[in-house]
Structure formats: C-alpha cells, structure tokens
Image 1 (cartoon, rainbow, N blue to C red):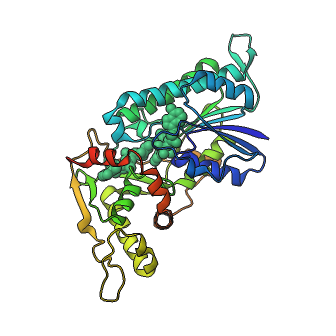
Image 2 (spheres, rainbow, N blue to C red):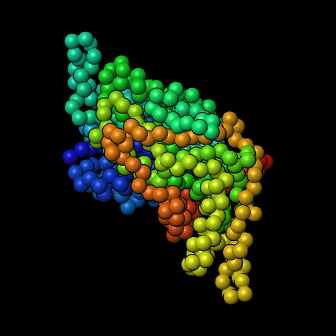
Image 3 (cartoon, rainbow, N blue to C red):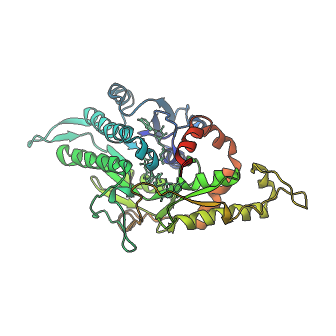
Length: 379
Ligand code: NAD
Ligand code: TDX
C-alpha cells in the first residue's frame, strides 16, 4: 500500500491525475493538499474524496507546520507536486504570488519530506533516505524558453525562461535538483507541453475559446496567432507522471509532449469548426448556446459560429513564439507515447464542456468576470 501526497489536485491536471491513479492502482491511498485558490474547485474532485482511499485537506503548500503534521500523520511514500500558480498572463500582472507558491512552496515540501524521510548519514555526511520514497515535481516545457521555426526541447536544452511564471517554475526545478545533488534526495521531474481536456480552467486558450463561442462572444487571439504550442491530452500527461513516479530513474528529468504542434490560430479555427459540426450532427447540443435565435426549421441558429468571431488583440508581453517537446527519453526508457490523437481529444474535450456547463458556471461564478474584463477590456 503506497500513500501519496498529491498537491494542487483540485486543479486541472492534478484532478485528472488522482482520478487516473485511483482507477489504475487499487493498493494506494491519496491525500490531496490544495489551497482552493480561484483555480481549485472542490466540485471537481467531490466524487473522489472522503472515502478510505482519498482524503482532501485544505491548505497551503507554503505552510511548514501543516506539511510536518501531514507527513507525521500519513507517512507518505510519494509526493507529487502539482500545486502552482499556473497562468502566464496572471504572472505578468502579479509576479510575487508566483514566486511564493511556485518556489517557496516547492522548497517547503522538499524540506518537509527531508525531515520525514532522512534516516541517518553515510560516511561522507550525506543523508540516507527511507527506501522506495520519491518526490516528483510537475514542471513545464516553458522552462526552456522559446524555439525558432526548427528544433525541439530535449532534457539537455539550456533553461531560459521568459515570463515570471516560467522563471518561477524553473527556479522550482533548480531547487529540486539542488536537493537531489546536495542531499541525494530521491526526486524526479517531468516537463510537459500544453495540456487540454476536462476541468481545464477557462482562462487558458482552449476552454476560454469554447466558453466564449457558447456565449457568442469574440475570440481573442494574441498578436497574429502564429505562436506555436505542442498540445497533449491531459490523460496522456497523467499516464506519463504515473510511470515516472513509479518506474522513472531516481534523479532524472523527463520531457513529455504530444508531437502535436499547432499555431494558436489553427487551434481556434479547429475549435470553432468542431463545435459547429457537433451541433449540426446533434441539434440537442444547441441548448447550451446563450443566443437562442431560431432558424426557419425552428432550430437554434448556429450559422454565426464561424471564423468571424475571431478578434486579433494586443500580444502578450514577452510572448514565447514556439514550444515543441522531444519526448524520446520517456518513450525509450519507460515506453510512454501519447495515445490520444488531437482530432479525437478536442472532440472529447468539447463534448465534456457541452455536458458540464454547471461546472463551468461554478468555477467562473466568483472573481472570473473581473479577471476577464481587466485582461481583455483594453486589448
Ligand atoms: P491549475 O491552475 O488548474 O491548478 C493549480 C491547483 O493548485 C489549484 O487547485 C490551486 O488551488 C492549487 N494551488 C495554487 N496555489 C496553491 C498553494 N499555495 N498551496 C496549495 N495549493 C495551491 O494548474 P494546472 O494547469 O492543473 O497545472 C498543474 C501543474 O502542472 C502546475 O505545476 C503547472 O505548472 C504544471 N503544468 C501545467 C501545464 C498545462 O498545460 N496546464 C503544462 C505543463 C505543466
Ligand atoms: O485569450 C487567449 N488568447 C491567446 O491567443 C489566451 C488565454 C491565450 N492565447 C495564446 C497564448 C499562448 O500562445 O494561446 C497560447 C496558449 O495560452 P495559454 O492557454 O495561456 O497557455 P500557455 O501560456 O502556453 O501556458 C500553458 O502551457 C504551459 C499553461 O498555462 C502553463 O501552466 C503550462 O506550463
């Protein structure tokens, strides 16, 4: 029986991850630690928690006393750290919060693990560690900076972050590596490309575009829309993390990516076309549209769902041009490959959003309107 501490699992990827590992492994116990910021939502994990296999604890990863208490109570074998401030645009507005959570929070978890897992010292003064424990850091391809038209990020690509968000994630990676090198702490890191799928907060490109189409709003594309991201279905990322935590080589870094590079404008056009097609094939989906004007057949009109909704807006400051991951190492060492083709993943994702409008409403009921207006008003 392995006991996991999974931080940030009321957010997008962490929630998908705990659902995946609870279904995959019968012999595990999961403790979720999440501060429930604007990005965390208890409803996302309501069906998974409060049974003998999965508990939820509301708290901040920067809280030292809480971390020590959890370690002494639950004797964790694995820590998987998803908790982070994750949105680049917000990091441009308020960098300090990103440094606090992403850097100091990571360091606090590493220290709590060190206090709990060190068993003594070897003859050279290095700490000795409990057997079969592992700290895993969920990181991002953004630590490598930006690519030109050619090439891919490998694990050897120099770290060169540009945004306050990616600088904070890079700093967190460096602290994890420092604990590996200084204390011989058992750690692994995954650096993944852009995820998409269910429970993605509608401040990020794909869920924001879906939400805006359903509400008949304009679709803001930064700059000229030619920036490239490498999109991976979230469950494929969760599978990669599961493999690395359980079978990855101690101390190693693994890049995770979908070999699915697309310009933002392509993503937006594909999302528009897919929503329109799904509504043509299944008119019942049209009920979720805010605009309820009827056509001559008495069906809700969808002819306005087209590329004219796209609005090019002021570019993001310091906007990275292109990300592309080379996942050869994780494929070669652990046999991981992306399983979901983008064309299928985007359909699954859109259908999930069409069927889960209550979730969208619940996560956007608080401060979201203010955020949206501040971010897009003068763009
Ligand atoms: P998210 O913003 O959807 O979720 C973050 C979660 O962390 C939320 O539940 C939030 O409440 C929680 N949290 C924030 N600050 C906290 C704190 N101080 N203490 C405890 N909990 C806190 O993020 P996501 O998109 O699910 O990303 C998860 C991780 O994966 C992040 O570390 C991110 O950097 C990394 N990542 C994301 C992507 C992506 O495409 N979304 C890609 C690669 C890596
Ligand atoms: O309204 C928008 N219009 C737009 O053109 C938004 C929100 C985004 N964009 C662009 C900016 C990016 O080039 O779309 C691209 C994707 O943007 P985001 O969804 O904000 O993702 P990105 O900035 O690439 O970062 C994401 O992937 C790496 C996650 O948010 C990070 O947490 C992860 O580390």
